[in-house]
Image (tube, rainbow, N blue to C red):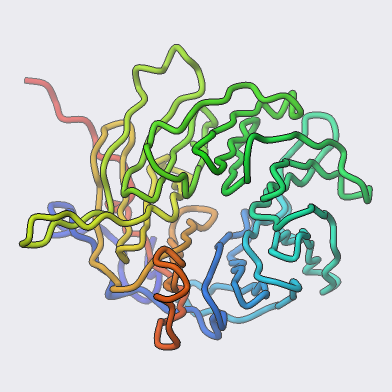
Length: 358
């Protein structure tokens, strides 16, 4: 890659030998939301970024090779927008909100329409390729259901009852994973989408904040409010490869650790490595196979609630805004609201070659 964000991204000896990342070339997206960011999603077909926000709006930006951003579209929910995702062909954006609805925006027509409804807020939305029905939408809600939608129909194609409120879900190839209240994690094979393939209790002891599927669909990562991340494989024969680790913690001179929520986990589309980001204002890149951290980045001093890699993994987007981890009383008008674009140097997210055995 030559001059992403105006600088040469070739690896240097200093960066290769240093696990501390550099934020100096990060670029701020213009005209950010007016309230906390809830989700980020890049198109798989072009350099367009969708941003959902507690200001009840979804914004779509076009990102240039220099990191400059242009607002291309904006549409509204009737309450905070909580989740956003792109159609596979990059022509539509779907979002879920506290208005108990999912809405789809067509970039060609410039029109937004309601495409799904629940009895409680829609916390999660994902588009996926159904084996026989083409592209479909799945929505997860605090009404304790998953619903599948054929977007040519007004009624859901199927509804799956879940143990508790759906806080997070993700899809990769034929794998769907949900995380709910009371730490239930459900694994669904989308070849049989109305049946829960497996339910486990989260290996982490506290509330699930995020689940994110491996790109190869062999497993998923779980992040919780206790500053921990777990790596889980779907197939029981790989259970020995499951592990969890501490992250997003700091131990000041008092010796009492400060523990922060893991808010977001994003997988690199090419390398299969992943990021974690948290309430401590930091993000890190990890190699799950080698079980080590590739890069850690300095704190931005404010919470990071959402992250996303672009289609080829050359840009890492992260939001800076209040994440509600300390309740309503900790929010204030001075809290910044930004979406930042970090140009990826290859050594930051690429797995390191295994050490040669002597």
